[in-house]
Each structure stands twice: as C-alpha cells, then as structure tokens.
Length: 481
Image 1 (cartoon, rainbow, N blue to C red):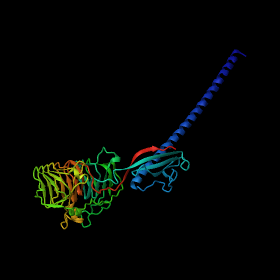
Image 2 (cartoon, rainbow, N blue to C red):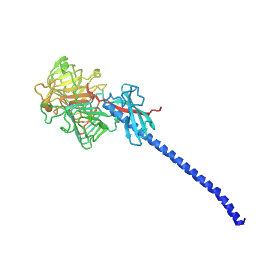
Image 3 (tube, rainbow, N blue to C red):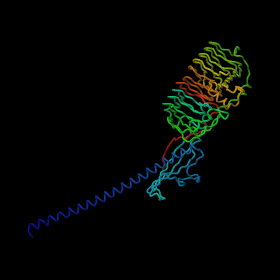
Image 4 (cartoon, one colour):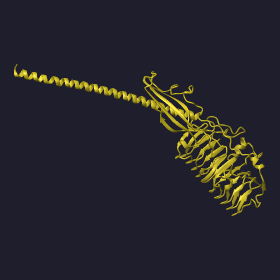
C-alpha cells in the first residue's frame, strides 16, 4: 500500500464517526424540537380550553346576576335537581366543530336573608361532540341586596313629575316619579363618586297621558306616546340604577345607569289620616291669639293638637316651638329669619302641620324648620287643589282638575330657607326648592328644583317604597375540588 492510499484510508476512518455523530445529533435535536413543539402546542391548547371555560363561567355568572335581579324566584339553569352538584342543564355559550363551551348556574342560600350565592360550573369540550370536558371550572359569587327593595325614598313625585332646572342637583336619596323627569343643562341626580353597590335608585312610571289632559287623566302612556319619560339636558348626568317605563335612551346615565326593558308600576303617594288629625284637635285658636301670634323677634310655644283658623304670618326673627300637631285652615308664611323648632321631647315622631290655604306654605329669607337632637323635623302637608268642589278635603283628584293642580306651587322654600330632617308634601300641587341646603324629603304631584339648587336629602317619606330589590356582587372565588 502506498503512502497516499494509507493517508486516504485514515482520513475516511476519521470522517465516518464524525458523520455518524452529526447525524445522531441532528436527529436528536429534531426529535427534541418536535417533542418541545408538541408539548408547547398541547400546553397552548390546554390554556385555550382554560380561557374559554373561564369566559363561559363569567358569562354564566353575569347571566345569573341579571336573571336574579329580574326575578328573585329564579333558581338557576337547573331547577329540576334540588341536590344540584354541577352536572345537569348545561347552556351552550360557544359551539363550533372543534370547541364547545357550556355553563350552568344555581342560586344557593346565603349567610343571611339579604345574601345569596350564585354557583356556576363551566366546561370546555373538544371536539364539540365530545361528552367528556377538557377543562371544568367552578366559581361562586356572593350577592347582597342593597339600597333598593324595602328602603324608603326621599323624593316621591306624582304625575306632574320632577323638574331639575339648570345646575340643580339631588345628592342622595331614592327618586320615585309617576310622571316624568326633566333635567336642565348641567343638572344631576346622584354622585359620580358613589359605587354601583351604593347607587341611588330612580324609578319612573310615565303616567302623564293623555296630552292634553281629559277626563281619563292620568293613565300610563303607551309605547311612543308623549315621548320618553326621562329627558336629560346638555352635560346633565344621572348616577343611579334607573328603571323607567318606555325609556330606551340611557345616555348620560351611569352607576349602573338605565336598566333596559323595565316597566315600573305607578305608586300611590304617601297617605296621611287627615280625619284622625282633625278629630284629635284639643285647642282652637285664631292667628291673633296670644298663644299663636308671633311678631318680630317674638318667641312662642304653640300648644299641641291645635287648630288655627286663618292665615299665620310669623314675624321676622320669630321663633315658634311646636308641642305637637298643627292644623292651619289658611296659609303659613315665614318672615325673614323666622324659625320653627322641633323639641327634643318629640323624639323621632315629627309633628304634622296641615295647611289648607290657597297660598300654601312660603319660607322667607333665611327662615327654617329646625330639627331636634335626633334630626326629626316637621311633616308639612299642603292640601289645596284646583277642584273647588272639595278642596282642601279632596280624597281623590283626577282629570283636568289634577292637571290644573299639579304645577301650582303650594310649598315654596327659597331665599336660603332650610328644613333639614323635615318632610315637605304638596298633596295635589307642586313643591319648589329654589336654593341650596338640606331638606329631609319631598313629595308632591310635582317637584321642582330651581337653578343652581343643590339639595341633600336627610330623611325619607313615611310608607314610601320603590318596590325593587337590587342584588350586587360582594365576593368572587374559584371552588377547587
């Protein structure tokens, strides 16, 4: 063998092991990459199943909250099994050839009467025809009833509705209206800083038809009749849970805003036993009587259960302390800085002032009804109506007489007058608040807040109820098996 042949043989013997090693390495790397790719694909696919199961669970919980708020008797998607365990009536959320996701829900008892639990089981199936889920997820939401339902209201208006003029604001207290709500420019109901869980409630029945009024007035407006019940001016906002008959436009309503497709039945305005009040009269006085008359800078304590026959004019800086209920057959006018005081001995029972005169109740500059040490004010009721055949004794006013009564102001709080803790009620007419300050509660066939009035309501109307329970989410957790 020549030296050249020997060198070529040695070279070939060296290349062969290198080649075999290289091929083995490449095959190993390809196998590793293929395995890694398969593992990555499997992980990615499983994550997709998890995400879709999560989305199905969230959808089931959202549907559960919605359905339970619409009907508190709703028990979930599976109502046939009292021992529901997460296997039953599945609702398809997504159904394609490669993937199907489902959810099922149930309402469970909570820790107390105002608590409930929504349980959901969500699943991802692949292929869609499979009966064995790839992923199963279980969650529970803790619900609590808040604000609405059995809570009283601070603003209750009849068929004349609620009017907020430019820049007027209502800060706090549920608002219940039989007629309509009209917000001027920059007007506002509720607070933007209030959470959804603690939002006030706005309820509107749209019972102010026909227009113009006739003997059938008032009746509930039909769909598209007489417009929508809530109108909102430029830059105006409502921060509340809003439910209104025939209302489809939810613009400028937040926290949570307009709940669509709602019908709110008309309410009966607060009742008061006028006859019992009259029967309880223990003393009858003329406005000029020494027990009643209060001139400028005067001080008087009126007897309880007193009937005052005529018009009462409180002088400037006069202070009257109420010992009990009052019936005024005429009008009540507060002079500048005049005050009515509720004694601490009244506790939480407000004295009632019935006013029958055609001018009603008017507050002068800086006049006030001063609440006692537990924030109890007076309950002031103006009884005048346009029905001359029965006013002020009318039990019911309807038709044109009601239409002619509802926008006539019979309680007028203006010029820095205040009535914290007090209830002002124009039974057949309008209450007008023209300045900032605190008022306990307002009721009337119509209610008006003047330009720039910002009113904080501190009390509620007797027997008022917006009749709706709102259930909101308190907690959210995954349930592991």
